[in-house]
Image (cartoon, rainbow, N blue to C red):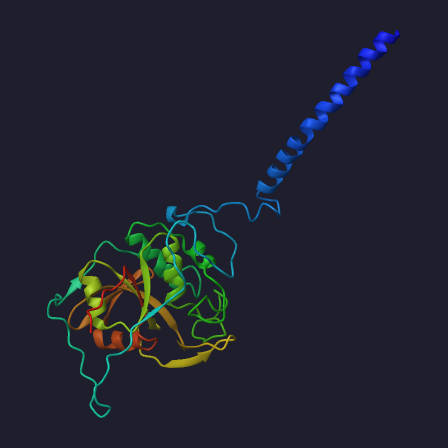
Length: 295
């Protein structure tokens, strides 16, 4: 090979080396970004955006021990609004008997609502949430909802125990979950759900009269029971009860209530319902905040 041919070859080799040096960072940067975005990449797990819950996801995620806001709905935090009982002017004076609001109808019933049988021994809260949401036009899968609830030893903040555990136990054994975490997760799905303790019968009547069913916490299939004080591992105390259960209030008269319990609709005497509902502190989930008159 002649001298000038060697020179041309050297120039071409050097030019190729320069191109590789210039474009290598871009190529490897693109490969790195693709790896981080891949759902199977450990680095990509934190980057993958989950679908907005307000659009009713269908895929069932793995169980999680914590839930945070930020999937599109204004979820806020896991809270239960506690309504204190009315003050009594004199300790010796008996508390006044509850008086029904004369402006509320004597009876009311919501139609067009139905339910399904719960899938697990202790999934009544998830089943009630799914049936309640469906009435307002939101499609929620019971199994998905159940596995998105936090898992803790305090039912005020998460689901306690095994979903297939024996019904009738109290924490820390298999139990279930109270209104706060359920309402919080419903808000994550886009529903205007709020958890309460201390509601009155008239609060429930007003909701039903307005065409809004209410999820209520009762004992058994609406039977009388007894509350038990329980202290969680973090030192916080709450009230629990054996055979804790949820049903949806859909109607009332002066003597009875109509309830949706999974796939069944039945009635119970009003007095029995009020006693059963009172065991866990008149706990319920309503659609929208309840507005209370100024004292």
